[in-house]
Amino acid sequence: MERLIIVVPAYNEEESLPKTINVLSELMQGFIKQKRISNESIILFVNDGSKDKTWAIINEYDKKNEHVSGINFSRNFGHQNAIIGGLTAAYDYGDIFITIDADLQDDVEAMGKMLDARLEGYDIVYGARNVRETDTKFKRWTAETFYSLMKKIGVEMVPDAADYRLTSRRVVKHLLQFKERNLFLRGIVPKIGYPSTVVYYARKERELGESKYPLRKMLSFAWDGITSFSVAPMHLVLGMGITTTLVSLFMVIYSVWQYFSGRVIPGWSSLMISIWFIGGVQLIGISVIGEYVGKVFNETKERPRFIIQDNLMSTEKKIDEKE
Image (cartoon, rainbow, N blue to C red; front, side):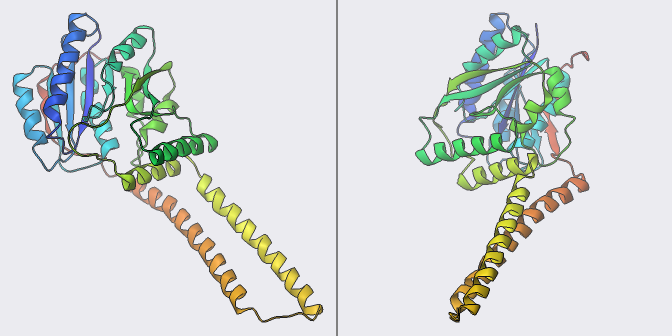
């Protein structure tokens, strides 16, 4: 039987963590009794620099629950890095890996379907929402717009799938070879290939604690996804530049025609509007180009994506290397 590692990023989750640990522990015990996974399976919590008692709770459960373990980052490195950090720490201990957020908004019962799909030979099983009834109209609209835009610019993604997925050991091995610092796992994982399928579920509302993804972070995350996988924004700026040039040329021809027609009217307003318009396009272009230059700058520094301060996984038994 394969050893399952459930990787759970956690940031300031002291309110929801005890319930999350109990729910996932009961679920794992059920899978073990059904002989669907190994008895040495583990729930690995990744404390992403929490400022509350999250790490203390993980430590407490590690001592009294043989299926609970954890790693502690030296500071907050972000959700995507927490997932990669967890997979990095867990790679030597598992055969299959499931990543899920600590708030339990993703339906944990979908893990059973993921394991069924794994038995059918799939290396990647994506968890995707079948409905978005718990989201506001604005959030649904922005999500649909984002997925539509990503598809148009050529980024392969599973619609309505977040970071709730099952991956095999060989998939994780290749995933860890992607060394970029600007991570967008929803776009990276499909690039790895291997047989994949999708399990659909209804996402729940958060019961305890506060959301760690307000609108500002969601927009920032979406922008990172777009700029990490496509130069489409630069093409858009090029299109705006060409359009502006054509409009300016038309205005020159129109002005000359007006001059020879004797209908010249001094137009301070139109002149200022033109200057501001062209200046705005230039600033947008410089900003977009600067975004890409900044990402290149961050990549060349090759700083670590995360730093593990405490690692409780060191007491676990490693598995033999498999191809």
